[in-house]
Image (cartoon, rainbow, N blue to C red):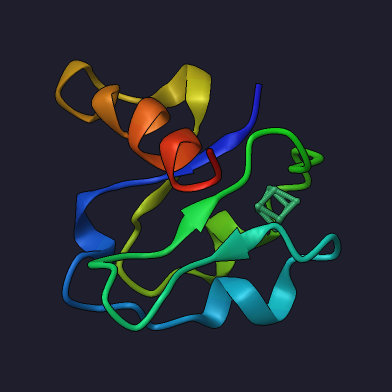
Length: 79
Ligand code: SF4
């Protein structure tokens, strides 16, 4: 059950999360609208959730209904 980056990251891409992630599982590209967490390598440490200045990152189990689509959006980036 990984952490997931959601809508507030779009247009923000602050990247504070990237600096604190101990397993380097948060990535993006210049063209992508947001950052994404690789669900296969996230170790659920919660460091990114605390670092995010726009409250875009949640544990998968804590997502509200409108944000659950970001589980797939994050995973698809790494396909
Ligand atoms: Fe990285 Fe920890 Fe956030 Fe997972 S919960 S993306 S391991 S900082």
